[in-house]
Length: 171
Image (cartoon, rainbow, N blue to C red; front, side):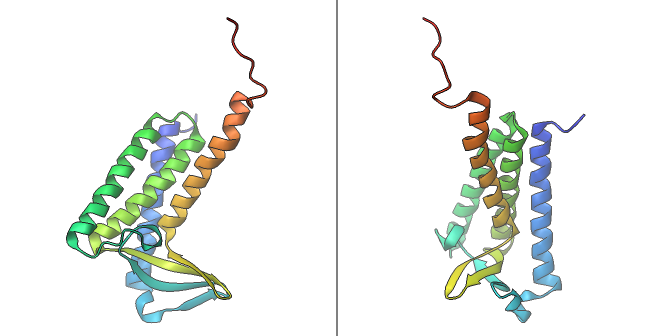
């Protein structure tokens, strides 16, 4: 007997949160990335230290205490809504996707609470193109959204058929 979708989703959220925070603690306190940066891992990926006071791409940058609290409240509110969705979702792919998003969001929310900004480390770049700097929580959120999109576009078609395959009910 396997895990219920609900339990699987919350387990994924917890693991995501623990891995994200463990990595951040290691990078900040053990590896001391701030003193060593940049560390080239590949020709296109470096380890750096960046504090993001906002959300993705530094949008809604919050430099004040009130701004940080507003972002924290927004994050926790969205996480609560996603958790309700996870609780009600019947498919494991949906709960895993939501678990990744919830765990990542909680990891970044914890940073905002503890440090006043989110710790980011991975800098992807190719030639003159520089992608934003991100962390494991961000990767989990993107992977979770990807799973939800996959489920929405591909699994829904398998389960219900396409619009051409559906016959109308008799009158």
